[in-house]
Length: 256
Image (tube, rainbow, N blue to C red; front, top):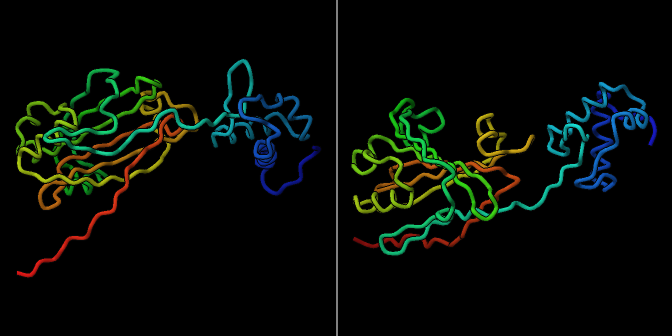
């Protein structure tokens, strides 16, 4: 292929040609791209243009740069682990899909407050006091990491004194405590994907240009009042989420 003649900035034209080569299988996953000198000769462009094109493809997650070796087409294997998000109950015991994961370190307990994002999820105004607990978990089979955060409003802790004394109670036990306090629990969960913050990238050991899966699970009690908020974050190239879907029966209306 000779000099390129696509519309747009020159580095974008080079990036588009390389992207097309990856899609067509010319550059296979795990294989090296041509060297800078080869790309300069192939596309008749300058070294800065080639470097900007490589940087753009790296930001897209299509390639990775290994220092001292060059640029490689990024392999995109299936996620290493499925995190089952189902909650099951047997008597007074609850189980979640990651109960078998191991703690990589002791949980971090802190006091915090609702934000413009977490406040509405918990039905609270911004700035309301919360207990926060961060759990860094690892899957023993694959080494995949996940960061699990539990946010407990002070109002919830007041109803269940155990949570005020030990906010780092595991979620399964929190469900049991809230049930014992008289709540009939239900849950609502949303899932989103976004690019990680710097501390998330470091903690979860996330490769460049890789998004994270971010779940927000709200535990509702009596009258559908939000009681706690759980957030789970994991690298999207290492984990996928699994759900058991059932059909709810509509409530039967009774004559009074």
